Length: 268
Image: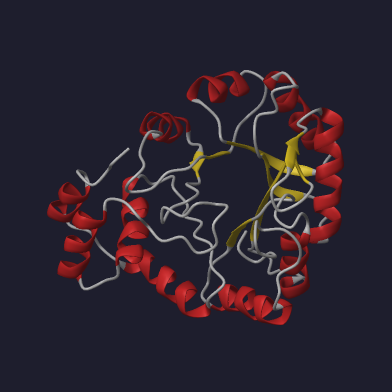
């Protein structure tokens, strides 16, 4: 999402070639999961991914989202009707230069379209061979269960971090169901504010990070990877340095004492 125009993640990324270099560094680091959305730009984030990485490595897994129409940096509306999802999906296929999207997610619930119809729309796109797997974003536990009565759900993407844990019950349910959980805002960033740092749980986080000799963002990501085996972290960045620092999180081992300390770090 960060590799788009600012403010408001609207328009193309200002330094297109640098953004491409950053994405290629992602591949060099062995990262093989990229999460985007048609609303990022809109479309420009998908286009820079394709410009940088197509033809894609065979093991690269790309997830995108539909159902949000972005008109400006501050104006958007939701359209998760079958027509709207089909339009967004076909645009994403074109932007990403794909014949089929690995994981296609409902970005937000559209209040003007019954939720079941939106999920059925995703199942229709899957049946047409446009998408392989179906995901949901910004949903409740009841909505996940309702969606499962219509089609198989591969992933859920809700806001979650070491400091914001209101979706703990959803993580537990997803774990029991073999559903991936993709926590957005894993470093506490506001999705509409470029580069916002992790702002809460800072005391405990800093104490444990100092003990382990890692940065607080690295620790926040490492905690998520320890939180549950079905979690994939998706921190965004425009910096090669931050990208490389974030990647180190997968190598950080947390002992029982550290996990216990971090267990008391939530503020919401």
